[in-house]
Image (tube, rainbow, N blue to C red; front, side, top):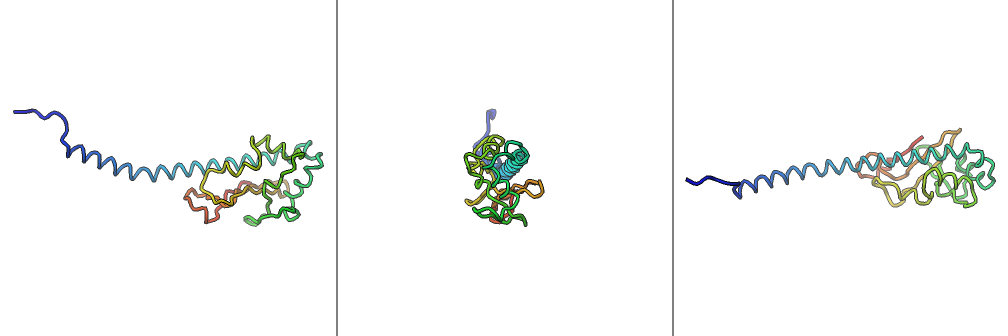
Length: 168
């Protein structure tokens, strides 16, 4: 009588098929968690921008700097911005890239606080977003609001729903 040593080919194929089914079930679930972490990262980015603006607008150097004054006014009243404004959730907001005067202490301060140039902020958005995604800001009575426009704050990879990431 011969003893069986090892598994038969049929048993190995069944195990591989079961593993393939499990992987097929797990991959979409794991990808959803990856997208949710990207959305969380975008909320963190928006909060960093909000904090940078909040710190900058109360900074004495920024308040005393003449080239910074128009940008502070544009954030308070976006309709006065010659570059235009966007209405997001009932708030008139300017693009953060409109703050572009290299001699402005405000621009220097914001780039110092965020750790990158304002023009490159939209390239740090990690969640699913449209090509025209921008970062918008406004200040209303000292409250800073930041919106990452045309992003998917749900993590469902549907940026066309215009559910934006907004941090106050």
